[in-house]
Length: 137
Image (cartoon, rainbow, N blue to C red; front, side, top):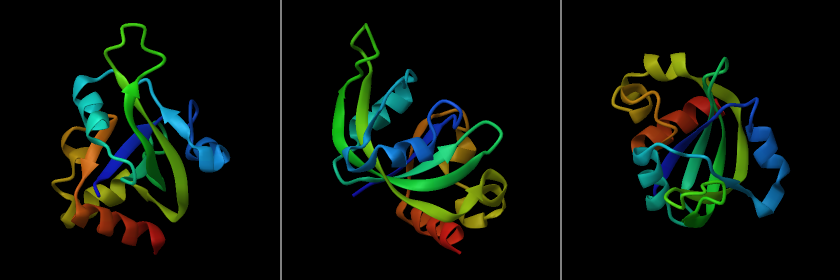
């Protein structure tokens, strides 16, 4: 099982909106960066994700699970890009801010810090455990 971080603008689609979708989940679409789309193609059913709110918040707010592996993004008329289906898991008791991630030495190599504009990225097992620990208090 792999771990991922999915970035979203909370004013457009928030973790709360994903949670409101319930067990059926939602399509994670609109990714037009080729590297991020490549990561979507690597996702497998059951993989776990952090949901990260961008914009003013800049924080990991909750967990999600991949329900359906990559399929053609229904919003892409060219048919070149993909989407996945995810469902919300738990909301973190304490959101993990970008400042907290930057301050944590164990997260110094996190893709979030090296490629900040990427909207989908892998998270290592060690990074996953550390961010969870920070978010669960």
